[in-house]
Length: 338
Image 1 (cartoon, rainbow, N blue to C red):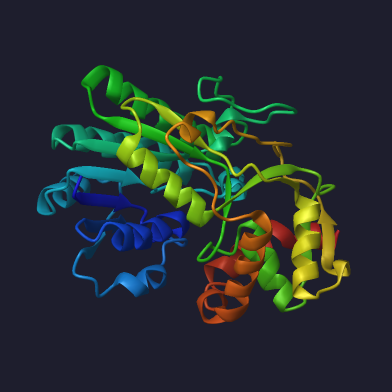
Image 2: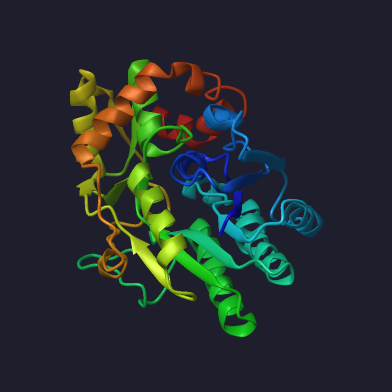
């Protein structure tokens, strides 16, 4: 594995992975393939833009021709697929884009990779494919019971990756990460949304009673796990990457406000979203056997994340306008007014 195509590499986790790969594997050549939808941002890759081992190719994973050209022109031997529509709320409002990118796009990428002799294909997925679990932990062989259009479209990509391993012998591996946070996360997600709103003393629209449980994983640890599975994971296997940091959403936000020195009166409970999963939790035994463990505690990661958004307002302020502003109003205006 020396010539990587990182799809969705201008997004949140993808760009963090690209920066890590170029630093940790200086002999690798990394081509980022990204459609640059609303959440794709070349500002995420400024720090590596002049690196001789980095290249950017704009394209859509659902476009067969574009994928084939990228694979051929860069002599790609390894694909790491981060490309996806990822926001549950948007999937409820408009599922079509999720089916196109996460289901059909993953199929096209797998099919072209098989045709072009790709040696290794890692598909980045999510704990949400399992659905909600009231107690205990999901293991990789558990049934998939997705509860949102987003989760269902990701589950279809997971199963297609398995099918291409079993049917065609494509060397695939799947990772399923838990709730990831850190720098460069698009501010529609809970932490960057609430941190940026709190900086401006704007209300924090918290769904329902705020007692939903999420398993928080810092993006540095997530990328380290993906890197390990890419190099050591068994072909055809799935690996959970859980944060082992279960927290109620309300407790996370209270902790965030305390670090920022902001009042809890900013919290505004609003109508919950349909089909909101109550709890996610992953068993890490399988990836732990490969040697993966966390390096960033939740307390460290939360403070580091807050400080990053406080110190990099140039990055998110220009995002929170235009398309983002229209989406925010559509999603929250009625909820906040009632």
